[in-house]
Every structure is written in structure tokens, then in C-alpha cells.
Length: 587
Image: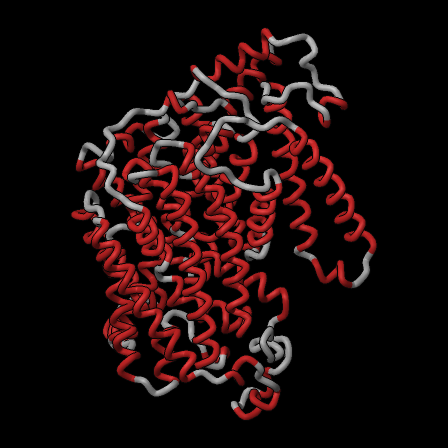
């Protein structure tokens, strides 16, 4: 009895949707071309990150090697983009990492994905509110904070004085959101906004190369002394000078933060049902938009670090501040005003994807049915917006800009890793129809020789995927994720590896041997022969490389950020095991 109960419980955790079980919804007009999808991807990706990351990364993490951080983050995003493109071309439904996880690896993983995506979107909204406040403050020459401080400091605590402006902006966000929940940007608006962003950033790049000084990439101790900073030379607040003042560790930490700048391309897969030719345009839209964003970020980071000594970059408003440094005051005000307008134009659309994820999870029974009526009942939609608006205000109050960046990056890195895992598994699965009953029937009626043997791991008898080979790949993939995580934990302590300590080196070698062996087992399993318009190349290596890079970047995050994410996940698990697992619609 206990064994059967545990077996049913385990099956419940990994039960999956099939495409036939997805709720049919009215299909919108297929009006988006490849160009529209590229504009959409660039519009959502080129956001606040390009304005604020230089101050957060170059100043105390990477220095001029800031541009290498973008290279690492861009490569990681490109690998994730290939995985998203595969699902975008395969699944004819508007989706996200939540849907792909539910279709491939089961209910529990889908809930984890959806729950972490909710955290990401809330943190994203909070970060934009805080950045919007910075833009407004700089535009008024920091008068907002000073006026509030002078007027209410006799009557309130110092904490309230410092953060009241954020609550004002949070309320403004809420009131801007309510009337705009059903407004979506047309393709024309998306093209125009994208073009304006590219023109402004192109101006920054050109100006940087005109006014830049290559010496800013090779600062020495003498430059610190001239600047009156000689007491801080050495590995410390300003690093050790040169192009990589904070060493390899600084580049990795900066790359983890810079990953935020590439978040947004996955919005393309939410428009699958509106694409004219999704099998072709979704992969091309993702790849082209990521490539454009990388080139822009690479150019802007190069221009900034050439114009400006990295230790003078200030968090929050780096692009306008750089033009003050070179004496272009008019460009400073234009860029600050453009920054403010760009954030204001997008601030009303940030809760739309959040509402969509919550709505999908409620439809599937993983969240309270109250949220399943968000799309049809106005007061429920408004109530949900108020709830999450309050959460956003609390995050703005309690967390700094870097913390919010890390929250958003961790959420996206986890969801990208799960999508890569889904790509790895789904290529080796047998076709599942009628809720998976056909695959189950094949297993029950299959030949007696369909048993797991050591020879069968490397030399399977069937040339097409079977339920057994699918389970082998599923288990091996999960083992690989565990081993790659352990490898990243060890590699995160790379100074001990360089010191020649035999213990960590032995562990690394052992983990690499196990990873190679298990990867070989997956490689030998039969792949699905179903013709698809787009397939991820170099399977299984590319998804595994994507997972490795994602996990390694996550290891660069601070311990306190992981503690807060852990608290959020504990709340989620309490909700899932207390409510979701009993009310899910998947059986």
C-alpha cells in the first residue's frame, strides 16, 4: 500500500501535458512578419539594462573588461535562444518556459518554472520603477530626493525619508497599469520604438569612439595617484588597473549581472499564434534580435569605457553622465530625457507577461482559481494588479538596484536552464498521443527484450525512441544537471584549483569523467525522426553547454540573494503541496 501510494505520488509530480490537452483559445490574426518579431525582441531586450549596467558592473566588478562580460552573457543568451527557437517552431501555442516544462518534464518542474518566472517579472517591474525614479531624479538634477528629504525629515524617520519617492513612483506605476492591461503595442509602434532606441544608442557609440581615449583601457598606478586615489590602488575598491582590473573573477561576476541586459527575447515565443510563418520567423526573430542587441551592447560598453575612466562611472545614469564628462551638456539632457521617456513608455506593459503566467498556472489548477478569471473579469484583474503592485513597492523599498538585477537574472537563468533540459529530453522521446496512453501501451505490449541492460545503454536495439530509451534519457539528463551543478560549485572556487590543491582537482576530474560517460549514454540513444522546421544542432552537447553556462553564472551571485530566492521557493512549495497538487487539471 505504501509503495503504491508513493508511486502514485511520484507519477503525479511528473505527469505531463500533451499538445492535444492544451486549452484551445481563439487564434488571433497572423499578422506578424519576421521583421515585426525582430523589432519586438529588440524592443523588449534593449531596455533599462543598457543605461544602468555600466555603473553597476564597470565601477566595481569588471572595469574596461565590461565588454567581455557582455560577450559571455551574449553567448549564454544565444544558446538559450536556440533552445527557445526549437520550442517556438515545434509548439503551435503561445508559451513560455512554464508551458515547455509542463509538456516535457512534468508538473512539479513546471510549477518551479512558473513560480520563479513570477519572481523574475515582479523584480523586473520593481527594478524599472527604481530606474524610472533615478531617471526622473537626474532629469530634475536630483531635486526630487532633496526636496522630499528637506520637507518631511522633521516628521518621519530617516528610512521613510529616503524611500518615500519610491512609493510615489510605485503608486504611479499602479495607476498607469490599470487602464493599460488590455493594451498591446502594435507592430508599427514596436518598430518605431525600436528604431528610436537604436538611433540613440548608435549616437552614443559614435560619440564614444570620437571622444574616447584608449588610455582609459590601460590605467596605471600613476593615473590613480593623479586622481588622488593612490591609497586605494591594488585589489580593492578600484581594482589593480589595466583592462581587467578586477581579474577573471570580476569578469564572471560582471557577466552574471550583464545577463540581465539580454532578458526579453523570450517574449517572441509568446507571439507564436500571431506570426505569419512561426516555423521560420520565430527562430530567425530570436537569433537576429539577440545578435543586434549584442552588437549594440558591445559598442555602448566600449564607447563608455573609452570616454570615461571606469572608476568614475556612477550607478543608475551612466550614459548621460558620460556626456557631462566630455563636456556635451546638451547631449546629457537629451539622453536623460530619452531615458525617462523610454521607461515611461514601457512601464505600463511590464505586468502583462506576469499576468499571463499567473493566468496559465491558475487555468492548470496550480494557483487559486481566482486568478483564472483575470482575462475576463475586470475587478479580478485589477485586484491581482493591486496585489502584485504592493509586492513591487515592497521590493523597491527593501532591495537595492543590484539585488533586483540579480533576482531577475537568477529567475531567467533558471528558466533558460529548464528549457535547455526540455530540449535535451524531448528529442529522445517517443511520440505521445492521447495523453501519453499510446507510449504507455507500447511499453506494456512491447517485446520482452525491452529491458534495461548495460549493453542496451550504449547499443540500443531500436532505431526509434521507445518508452525505455525515453526514460533512460530523462534520468540521465537529471543526473547531468546535478553533476554540472556540482562541477560549477567546485569551479567557483577556482583559486584553490590554481594553487595545485589535489582534492578539488580530483573532484573536477571525477565529475568530468562521469559527465562524459552519461553524455555518451544519451548520445547513443535513438532520436526522434519527426521532421521539424528547426532543430537545435549538436545534440546533446549544445543544451548541456547552455545549462553549464547558466548554472556557472548563477554561482557568481551573492549568498544573500540565494537565501532570499530560497525563501521565495519555500513559499511556492508550500503553495504547491498544500493546494496545487490536489487541484491540478493534469492527470
